[in-house]
Length: 172
Image 1 (tube, rainbow, N blue to C red):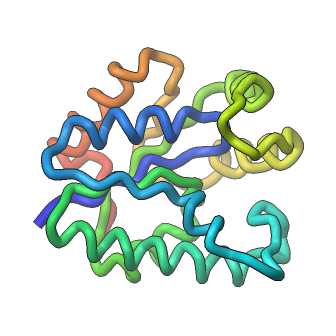
Image 2: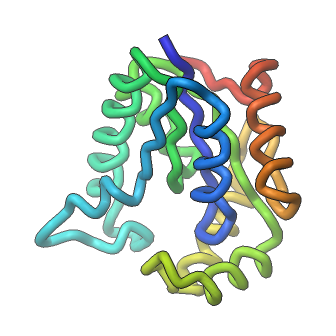
């Protein structure tokens, strides 16, 4: 049975780059991109950062959690996505297990700069990104947050170390 590692944080935090590097350190591993689950929504989807999207977001995160839990029966799974702390219990319940919760939280200016310059991601709403950054910065998170301004290799190595020590593990 593999581990389940969540690499989370606001948009522009470096989740996708770091999550891929973390997944590359495990064999066998699976990289699950949370945005892909929102991409399954076809008609009637609500932008996930809007207040009225709560029910939709819970459904999508439940599906992602269930998929991650199933994959973790055989692989170390790295989930790359915005998993805000209040949704963590739902994710764990659907996954059927606790998980390692790495929260990347570089300074807001770094996140906004990354959003402005990236070309491979459709999200560009700086006001929503600012709100999400603040929600992570003020949420009660019982795990250390990582600045994520070091090199990708350094941040990934720190996450792997924290997984090994159990320091970022949540309850099941």
